[in-house]
Length: 352
Length: 131
Image (tube, rainbow over all chains, first blue to last red; front, top):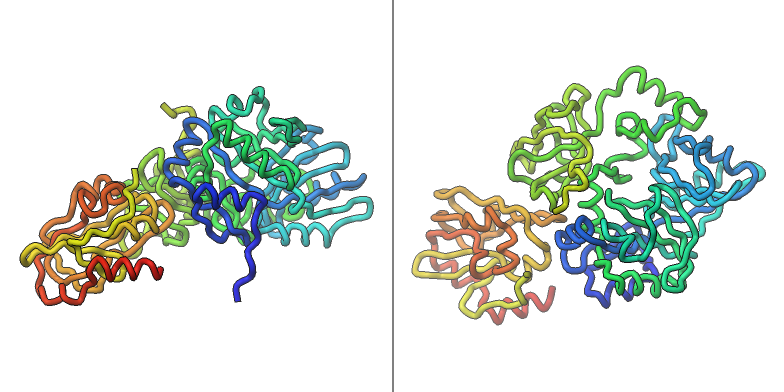
């Protein structure tokens, strides 16, 4: 029997907008409204809004919170001041990635972790089990709505000033109290607006009235893949380590977080395989799980609306991981040529 | 712009959401409005080679949207006379005009009696209503 799906506070809004709803991470979520490609282009050229209320929010508070999280998370939390945020990984002792997340420092000894919806319970359980004296981990996911507003005109449309990436502040939008985070998953300028659950519908209506185009999970996936942001569960998992995944930049290997020793070893030895971005040289759409010639595998693949060709990421032997290396993707039995490219696959700032 | 839902009366339909337009012993094949709507905007059409044979109820190619890939099921058996280059080059044509410019292949039927096994528009509309 299938488990009952949860709904975000915006469920009725999505249905009213004619969204196609699909199950995702235990939620009924909009995969598209008008169409993936139109929504994708709206974000690259102007402004789109995504309901990301399904994501998990964990609060970690107390005098030992910083030291505890510094031990659990790969990046150097000591560099994060009040009002700042950081992309970081929850790693296991092998350096495998339990989840990737953003840690917001709300104040001294006060952190908000925004985690992947599908990993919410795992991360909460992981931290709760290890929670030291002087620190409390709470799953507050159901108390919040979260709306990402992304695109070159997003700040303009929301009437917000420019702000440095990975900062956050409390503010107000059309009378609604919101936490404005300068973060996102599209590679564009934008914000993620966190509000009280009961304000989410009003906030969504405001954002849409200001001209943001409603965007579904389909466009969220094509946008993130064009800029090579990994998707947990596809590109990174507890069985893939941070170095092979190209996320060494998010690992402060000189600190003592779980898995740091294993990751130092992998870095010293050089990883056997690496996660690389690629574009198809022939007409074909790569998909998750397709074999790559020479012993690799596609972890994410799609059709790039901006490049109008197949793109993807996958693990390949390190010898095939350098830029311009030619790859052969097994597209349902047919060999199709691809080429390793530099990140991001779609360079920003080229939107006409 | 995506087309509005329709199932023309002059076509024959296969339950896997493919249509056939019969002209003598030739047939033009494509996918129905329902199929293209379910897939979303098409971004790739893997067409069969001219001269290859297609068999009723079997796959003769693939279409892909951003999110999904779908086999093209042939409603009829025959030899491929032509694949539509416009839909190969611009697969979104299928979404815009599934029964016109967005046709997929033209075949010479090897067993025209197979046409009798296909649904008419009324039967297909009832089939779609059950989906």
